[in-house]
Amino acid sequence: MSFDGTYRCPICRYGEISGLTLMDAFACNFCRHIFTANLPEQKVQVVDSVQPMSWRWTGQRWRVTTQADLDLTVIVWLIVVILVLVPAGGMWLAAYTFPPLPDSPGAWVPSVWISATLAVHSLIALWLLVEHYQVPFYVAARVRLQTWWSDRQAQSNR
Image 1 (cartoon, rainbow, N blue to C red):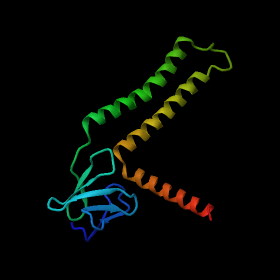
Image 2 (image 1 turned 180 degrees about the vertical axis):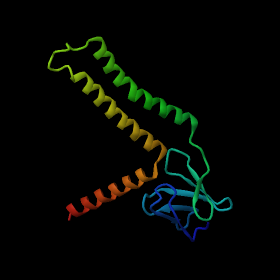
Image 3 (image 1 turned 60 degrees about the horizontal axis):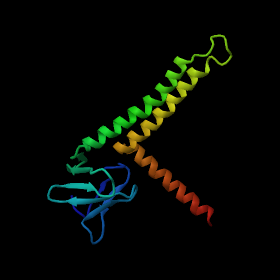
Image 4 (image 1 turned 45 degrees about the vertical axis):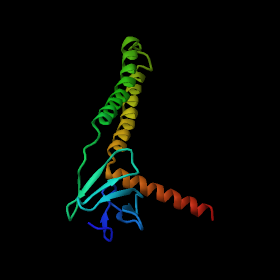
């Protein structure tokens, strides 16, 4: 690995990272992340992210060298569990404590409401986990969407 070469981006896996002029760093031409480089160890570390992620170049592909911060991971998973279970559990408890009359026309509402609450909160939790772990297809899709939106805004301003 050298500052003269270009390599596949370890985050988005779509763009290419190349050396920045007058700096000991790399930047991706797609997701715009900036990486510091440790050439003797063949490692790069992302510097514009909250998480300290780093990768080692094997000559053909990137290998993750750091594990996620355990304290932050535990907090994220705790938030996810609370976000999914507390609202749906509260809805279930209310429906169980005060059930509708069996023959009433709205007897189906609590079941649908609990299911919708569980589904929506699960989607929010999934988004939180994907953001935390920086899943490559999500990062690439987010960058593509931002690029498309900025191109659309530029065309509408003409």
